[in-house]
Length: 66
Image (cartoon, rainbow, N blue to C red; front, side, top):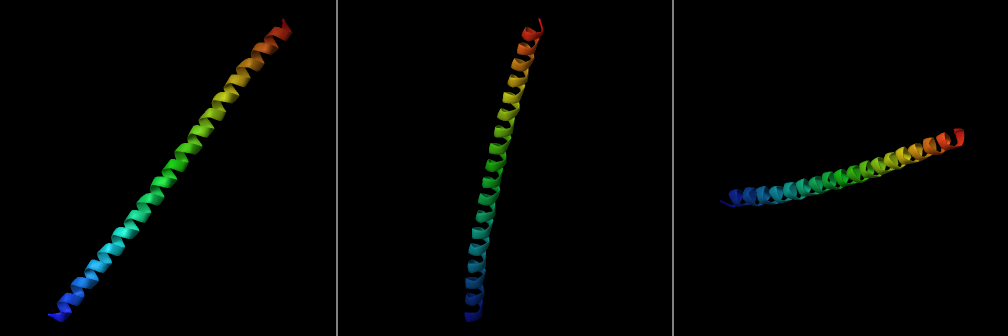
């Protein structure tokens, strides 16, 4: 009887630890995903700015060439 209780206690402890580790991993993945999305938004904004600068440069170049 005592052995069964010890096994149940150990199982409960192991399940709690597994839940903790699982939660930590989920949080890590969430934070990594957030960081990746932030990097993508930054890169997209930089690309958009470069395109706008390129369009403005070509417009000025045409005006100077005329």
